[in-house]
Image (cartoon, rainbow, N blue to C red; front, side, top):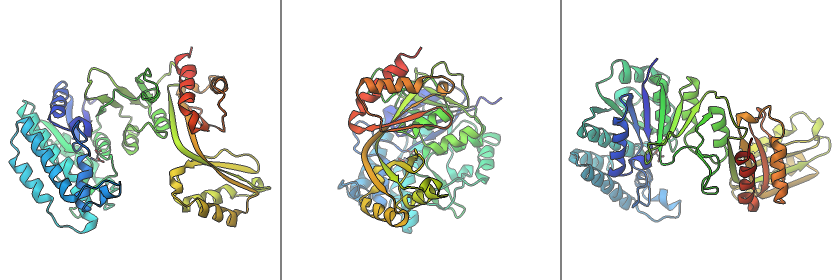
Length: 458
Ligand code: ASP
């Protein structure tokens, strides 16, 4: 049985020298931490933006921030990136003139548009992996920089959303384990190399993905995801400050929670670990004493509800049409229309002749009238309405199945606060159920559910 740990450190964990020093302390505290994945520097105390955003802004000559209504020129971003790396290098006391020189020349590189964004975006991770491995060596931990081109991390040509090619697994196993160089391998997250030798990045937040893919390739005993929170909380601690970190969750439970605002890490990274049942440990770089949340394939629950997710800004479409319940494919037609508008849909409570579809209201994006016109034209409903500003609250827990009365308890909590449940849906695995309520009641409702289902459970 391997004891190899793959540890991924996110942007906040490597945002400046102070953080990188903490990272070195964590790596040095277990000899099983032999493969480390690093993000680009995230937002430190004094930074307005993440380095990756600055890099994309340079590639797009200011359009990246402009589209977020921020006026930061490509040149300002370039200075911010160079200043950031210069100060990290100086504060860590490592040799880095070559890093700054190479960084500058990379940021002057002329590439076709399609490739330019990805190449520039990858430079944060690229140079940070060199910085971190140099600092590990300086602090007495032998380390080497394991670039995607060195370890054979080959990706598809889907720039901005690259996928790992199957041959990468064998390559990575060989280069990171069986024929590895001595010392700790520091792998830059977020990008790989295409068969043509170009850099292509994963979707945003993709260093998690590198970590998951590497953990899968090397058959790691554990994938650690180091971030800036103690783990996954029962309920958003900004709303319920007393809520506690959940010690253990199954992959399925975390999936149900993360579908609703628990955006801890990249879902695709989890899929890979789940396939080989590699546990994932979410940990806090700023509080390594805390054991964090461990995500495993199975657990024996001692509680019914383990966490409550909340998803704001949803809307529901209500449609009624006599006889639609006897029309094969009616719902498929409705969903197909919504698909044409690029609307992400979440739940579909139905009755005989009526159906509602819950979706992200931001996806309407000004096209609500067109959507209604198209549904009227193609499906000729008797009633068609879109109701806005709904929150979906979703208690989750493996222990809920076969435990009578949980939904009743939750409904009583809503009744006591005089909150009307507009939507009710139970997940098919019976690990979750969903209440749709008006946005304006969501803080009160989540508190009431927390008290009733988590605090007072027997
Ligand atoms: N630096 C990349 C991003 O900001 C990838 C990551 O940090 O996971 O999206």
